[in-house]
Image (cartoon, rainbow, N blue to C red; front, side, top):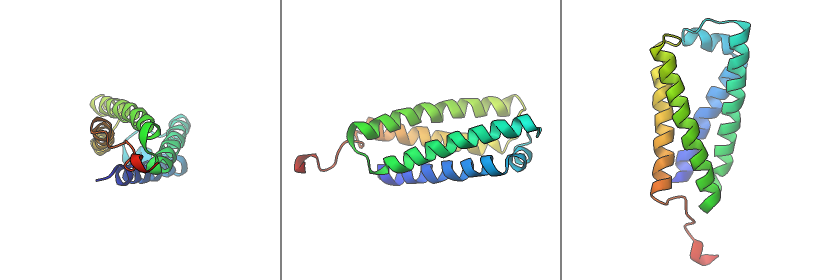
Length: 131
């Protein structure tokens, strides 16, 4: 899989979840067994706006090479790793139901993919000699 394909996948996931958290936070609260309230809806909308931003940044970075792509990948590793830890904590503490383990897998996929492209140097320009 290329970094472009990988970023396309995580972008679409982030944008879909982001739109859902912004538009239907009460529905998602029910899905994850979170007690819905105006405060949790507002928090969900803030989270959705962050996911939308992250998804759009990843989408736009699909064409990047070299250090700009590496910077996006490093930032994304941090976000995915922290998201996974926060979600695991939410499930283990009983704040979220078992469905949230799917989100942990999505975060781990994102972190592992970013780490792979950083570690293998796949973020480097493919046609650097032609520039």
